[in-house]
Image (cartoon, rainbow, N blue to C red; front, side, top):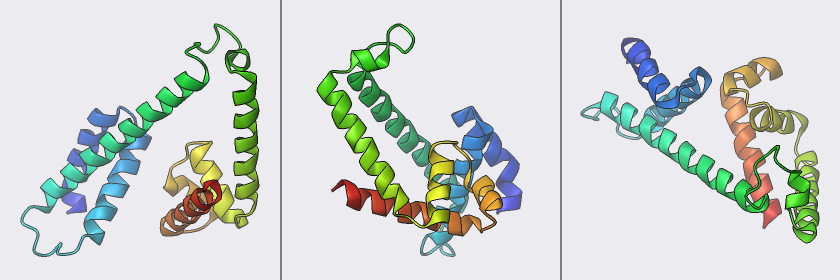
Length: 160
């Protein structure tokens, strides 16, 4: 199925995401969800499931991006980057609180095993794909996925 649909599926994802790296990430995640789905053998139309799953992943990513943009807009007081210092647009108490929260997150990241922390930061700060991270860390893509899950669980526990 992968070989039969790869090119067309990739074109579909490129049209939706406008970025090859994002399209490849979505493709990987969609195929992973398809493979892990119970009852795959009995599925009437796995190709349709694959495309619907990919579309849902893209929608979720867009939603997260909008929430992030809204948060940044609130924190900066609506000041566009470059028109005024972002630090001066934030109330001093919010700036201190944000700095303390960021310091707390970095301390939590320091508690993670080295490769787990590196994988998380490579993905979140450098926007590298799981495949590239796996290559750089000399581990499997599956291991990178496990590192990401471990890091996110740890950070969620730390934030609570």
